[in-house]
Length: 60
Image 1: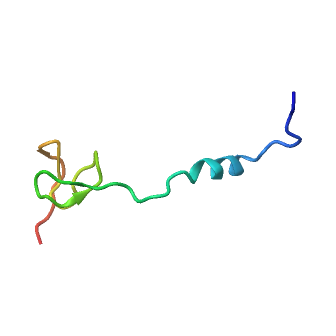
Image 2: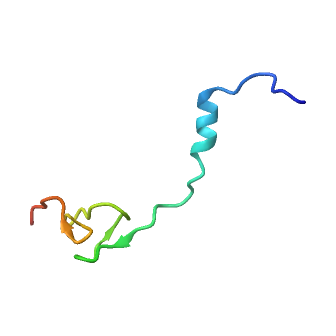
């Protein structure tokens, strides 16, 4: 059975595994304020997640 001559470094393995994401993350509309936000995250513009206010956001 073939055996590699030298072990690959952790950095080489990590860099090979890290470059699979080639496109920007998908955004969804916030159901409360209808602005784009990351999925499964608190909305940065209104502070709501799952129908409840999670963080206080100052109004401009």
